[in-house]
Image (cartoon, rainbow, N blue to C red; front, side, top):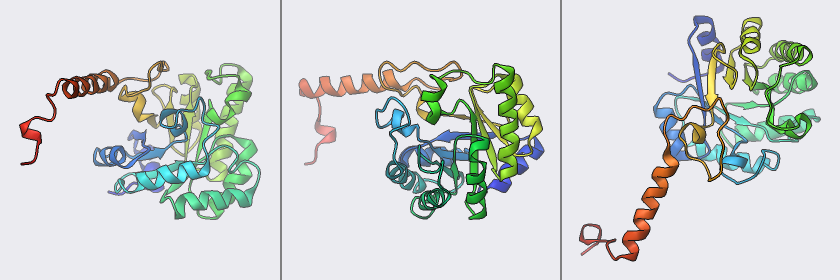
Length: 267
């Protein structure tokens, strides 16, 4: 069954958990899709995971288009959502429609994700009116990392807690089909999940959200040297040492003349 915005809402209504993971290329996208993950997100986390940036800020629309196109080729079952990068939507409605439209028309996305609350509500309404499904993102919003002062849990003070709740309701009213809650205390995420009719998808937001998302490289333990996993990341595999071991074995066999052997050589 093809997953759509309607499917996700039905899952919330039935109390069925939603699964979401990131993909940045065809092979992983196909694996996730065949595993029947509900939503595949082409995250602007590609900047840190694949492109080697320190934040998501440098990621461009062309970067997102390139990776979304690749992921699209591997997806049949899941809903495909693509992040709108920093400064491609925040202040100009026409620019937002044009850029989101490209992610859908050229990239093959079936929805876009934007970060922020009430300050971008009019942008979300405009996109929805243009038949572009929008997923919201509250709490720790990586595109605002310099304003937030680092990767910190949000919603710990009463003021910030009330703002996140209010923003979630605003996003719902603006037409967002789902809301990602990142790095917020579990009780706050639980309250937001109860207060809005659209699905909430948590990442570092505890157990009460309607679904969960992780960066696929993080949950597979496939990260660059020096990566320190956040508290919320559970490693379902630890591929980095396995990859290194395989590469070292290849290196040694080539140096010792053991590869290629007769089995791997054409006559």
